[in-house]
Amino acid sequence: MKLIFYCTDPNDFSSGLLDQIGSLVPAERLVVCRNFEQLQSCLLKPAYDLFAAVLVASSRHDLLDLLSIREFLTSIRVIIVLPDCEQETVSKGHDLKPRFLTWPAWDSCEVIAVLRKMLGTVEKCQRM
Image (cartoon, rainbow, N blue to C red):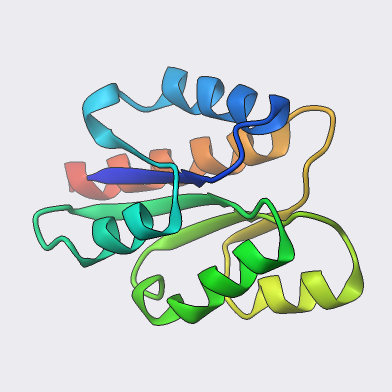
């Protein structure tokens, strides 16, 4: 099962988040998408057995792009990092029906904690 990490703006927060995710998820299970076209392509590949996606929306425009493909995200667990915490942005973020929604903070502990829990659940289900 693979995890998608999507981020178009490799800033300090997203780079640190990717590093932390890389320590949780083996490289062969991590698919990094640096632009919207790569993300679309990954979501459409039947060869990928996707279980989750961490989506870092770098702008409101980026969030609108994600909303345009929300039907491809319904079958996987989504963690989304919004560009800001404005009410309109948060409302649009909820349209993606994420398991967890946040915005960039000093660290990414909450995102990693949620992802760790999701990974544990998936591994437990695979053992059954």
